[in-house]
Image 1 (cartoon, one colour):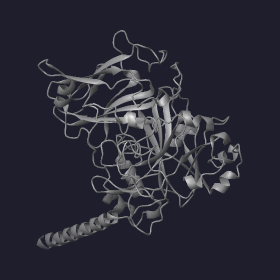
Image 2 (tube, one colour):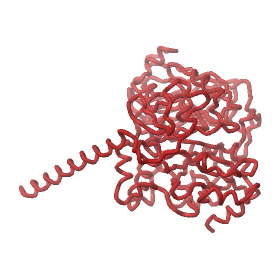
Image 3 (cartoon, one colour):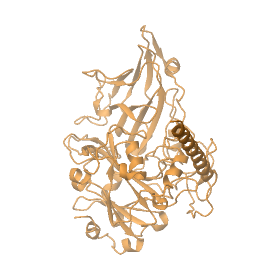
Image 4 (cartoon, helix red, strand yellow):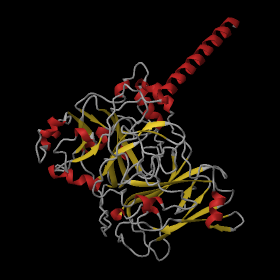
Length: 526
C-alpha cells in the first residue's frame, strides 16, 4: 500500500508539472500574435466614424489590446445592408439610451465599443439583428421588482433570467405579456402593431415559478439575495429608429416585504449587485481554447470543419455538448439535455457548424425559408399565420473570442428565395466575393470574417449560427423540434440548413446572373 501511495504521488506530481508547462505554453501563445500567421488587412473594423465610445482602434489586421490587457483580433466591419438595425446614423444615439438599472446597449464589436472588457460589448456571439440590454440584480427576502413601460415597435422582444454560467432559467416573451387595463399588446395576432395604448407591467420574484403560474411574472430561480442576470432583447425595431423601438426604457420600482415602495435611484440601489454594468469573463478560457485546439487528434488548422461538398448544421443543446463534439467526438452523447448556454435566448433555438477557408473560399448556405412576419418598414398588420417570428444567420469566431462578423435576417434574405422556397446565402471574405453574389443576381451575401479572433489563432476558422425565434406551435420543422442530436434531417426536412462548398469564386461566377440555383440544389444530398 505504501508503494502504491508513493507511486500515485509521483504520478500526481508529474501531472501537475505537465499542467503547469501546458498552461505556460498556452499563455505564451496568447502574449503576442504569431508573426508566421498571414492575416488579411481591412480598411474598416468599426461602424461609421468609429465605435460610439471612442475606444482605441485596431491595427490593419484587427489586432487590439482591451482594457484588461488581453490581445485579440477584431473581425472586419461589413458594409451596411438595407434594413440593418445598427447603423452609423443611430449608433451614438443608441449608446445614450441607458439608466441606473439598464447599464446600456450591447452589440457586436465596432458598434458601441472596441473594448472586449467593457459593459458595452457582449462577448458571447452578439447578434446584429438584436440589441442586448443586460443587467444584474439582487432581490431582498420578500421583495418584488416591478417593471413598467410601453410595448416597443419591433419584431420580437423578450426578457430572460440567467445564472452566472449564462444558462437561461426563465423568460417572459412579448406575446405572453398581458397589457395594462385599457391597453393592447401589439405582438398579439389581430392587434394593430401601431396601437396607441400599449402599456404593460410585470413583476420579478425570487424562487421558482409555482403552478399554476401567475401571468406577467418572471422568477429568479434563486434564493433571496442571490445575484442573477437579466437581459432585455430588442429584435429589428421598425425602421431602425433606435434599439428601443421608439419607446422609453422601462422603469423599475421595488416593493419591500413590509410594503414600502422604492422608486428611481432608490429601487436601483436596493436591487444593485456587483456585476451590474460589468463584463463577465469569457466562459471558455483562452488558454483552454489553445490547449484544446492543439490536442494530437484535433486538426488545429481546421477546427470543427470538414472537407465535404455539403454539410448540414446541427442543433445546439448545451455548452458541454459543443465542447465535447469539437474536441472529444468519441464521447459525444446520442441524447443531450437542453440547457442552453452562452446567454442563449429561451425563445430561440440554434443550429451551428464550422467552416474553414482552407477547404473552400466560397460557401453557400441554403434551406427552405420559413414563413415570418415583416415589420421593418412599419407594417401595421400582425399576422396570425406564420412559422416563426424570426430567423437569421451569422458568421463568427471561436468559443473564447465569441466575436460576430456578419449577420443577415429573414427580411434581408427573402429576395434570395426561388420558386422552390429555398434561399441562397453566399459566405466568403470580401476579397473572395463573387461578382454575381448580389441581390440583383438573386442571392444574398455575408462576410466570412478573418478567423477565430484569437491572438496566434487561425485566420481561416469560421463559426456559422442559425437562429429560429418564437416558433409557432403548429410548425414542426424548426430547431425546437430536434430533441436528440443526429435527428435534424428527419425532423426538419427541407428546413434543415446545408452549407455547400463551391471552393472558389470562379465556380460560383460560372452560375451566371441570375444565378442558376438548380445547379446549387443538385449539390444537396438526396
